[in-house]
Image 1 (cartoon, rainbow over the protein chains, first blue to last red):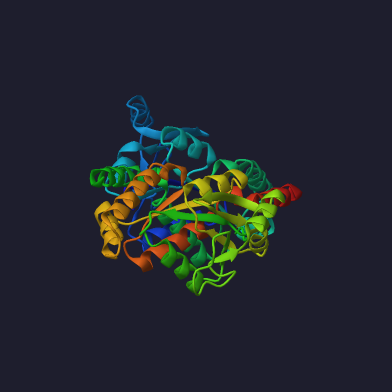
Image 2 (image 1 turned 90 degrees about the horizontal axis):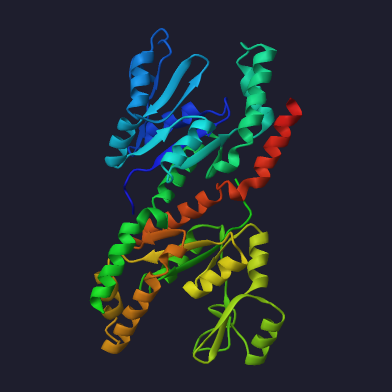
Length: 207
Length: 207
């Protein structure tokens, strides 16, 4: 079936385990590539350029905006964050399924620019467990926890924009489910127009 | 994820191996039920009522039409064929994924009556192989083969109406692919509105 790479966005509540899921997909299967975002925020201790982020100056980032080098970008507080086109396109051309781990506003921008983007949303099995995970770290104030929950409420409003919902109850099951969804997506009629066209031409040649 | 049953139609060219695929799904997994069609054609030697078909008189069949007991029905040559609603609904309510093995006209009627029906199309890996399979039986005249190929050309026109395309190259792979598609479909956002609604209510209660 279609082995052109699929562009996908993985979103979900803070505390839903997105990072661990992405790591699992990359470790277990060889068809994935993770898009690395660019940012103007300063690297933290131990952060290497090109690993979690490509670190850019404001001038560099704004030049990239000018040159239309981002699939999507946004400014949070005083820092820019964006998804560079070049790496994503290169990996898709190689047939890799490219994962973007971004939130809903970014996801919708990506979907607008690339309508065949697959949007995946990860949820914990219950709100109670989400709250537990957010508070369980034990390091956050009540205010921070409340604001995270408020954000989750807001994010939950957008789930209908997504294609699939996965519940991160058991990590292993969830990774297999995500992989299954992406494998199935390669069989969608929309993504196999070329094969269908070829079959039609061949059948007609027999008539 | 959603364990309400999914109604699905499996269509595909004659010779694509639909029957074997359905048999494989039913044997390997316990989440499937096969819908048995009703017909007014006479049973052939060895055909039991309720296995391949429910055998009905014309009067019985027409009464069932009157009573709106079919999801879809059609008349071919002089015989009626139809999909009785009752069995399908019962199995869906039990949480089974119900397979209908019907052709495109029927598939589209089912989709119209039940918009969340999943439409699956099976193809052999190439038109040459399809021709080989159709002629390989060695029992058919050139005319019959030509008319089957003509029918395949016609059926191929409708593939865009389907959701997924599976290539029946290796039987085992194809069965696993079909199963994966249906499993993934249970994770679609559309089929999980209840879980999403519940998460929203729970989150709001924390605020």
